[in-house]
Image 1 (tube, rainbow, N blue to C red):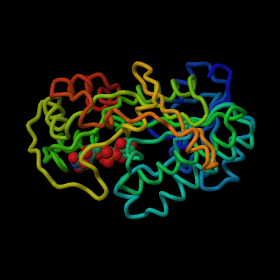
Image 2: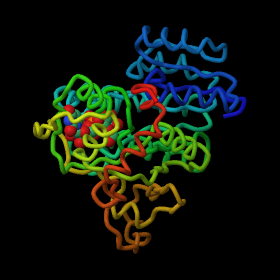
Image 3: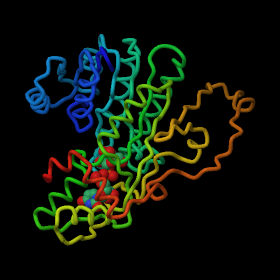
Length: 335
Ligand SMILES: O=c1ccn([C@@H]2O[C@H](COP(=O)(O)OP(=O)(O)O[C@H]3O[C@H](CO)[C@H](O)[C@H](O)[C@H]3O)[C@@H](O)[C@H]2O)c(=O)[nH]1
């Protein structure tokens, strides 16, 4: 990132705020934030007061605003998205417009402008998707791969990272539970047995940087991560806040899965194990169906899917330790 001009779409969000600080420390020449909300931009501008930051009001749905922010950029982090599962269930076309068409605009504009590298932020919900948010992100991954096949080996490198749940991200369950416990409960657990991967925000930034450094066209990078049940999470937060708030089961919301999958068995069969990460390479074959007979992949998936049910499972103490290490958690609860 040293001396590079970086564009972060959706740059005022949880990821953007941390990535901006990281890129500044890494010596970026200029960081451009493209987002819709002038108030969030203003808050960030006043908070950071940094000459290397520039703000572009715009929307990834509008290719004109993407093009204006893209000219002269070296690296792109594409974080702009509709990411709430329930709201995308009610407004699936909005998820299509932002997550699919918006991503297509970002990829096309990056290629047209000869950008070096683009990292698109995807989610475990894009794997075997059942909700509109995950389906739209799965299509974003397909757009990345289709663009990479067209340009494989030359020009712009476009790749993805897949996240699990980013801990303490805006609008997610951890800040909600903290708020509920502080106001005396109840803590509303959808299904006590439900599991989610737990990814600290700092790890999500490290994952993007890992992808930036190692990406070849169409790669998907995954960070191996632990998980816990939602009941364990509620109990850990109760304990950390010295409370005993009632934990009430409220039932699963629209479009939710009991557990998430970060990589399928098929993907893992051909993935590179990079210690803390997996690299999943795209299927680079072309549309000539004859090649499926002569170049068909003989590997049989011998592994199982990598899910939040079968990854390392944190108990209450393990979850508490992870929470306690989060700067976002310490800032919110003090200590
Ligand atoms: O009142 C609540 C709200 C949520 N949950 C549970 O807590 C877990 C996490 O819920 P979040 O709303 O925090 O997160 P989601 O899993 O729905 O999705 C989140 O994680 C995704 C990645 O998997 C994306 O990042 C997405 O943007 C983000 O909303 C889920 O099992 C959910 O059922 C509860 O038990 N009670």
